[in-house]
Length: 97
Image (tube, rainbow, N blue to C red):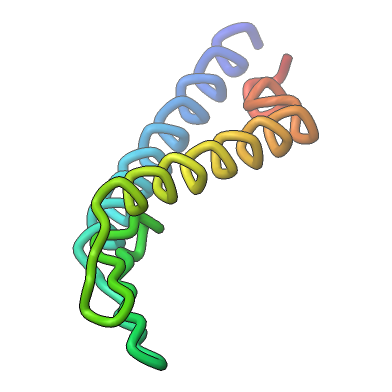
């Protein structure tokens, strides 16, 4: 009985590793994808993982603006992840705790 519980926990750990590996592959794939939007002489290039690569207005780009926007996006993603983790209780539920 104790062995069965241990085997089940090992299986769950294996499943978690597989899910993590799949998430990492997806993250790399998204980083390689780009979306380009051009309207009214504004051009934005953003990757699938939500990093702005280029922003230009009337042909003029501003690297500082891109860096600040990326920082704001990153902070909003961190905030959302924290909220989701609070709601889900982390992974403790999957580990039988």
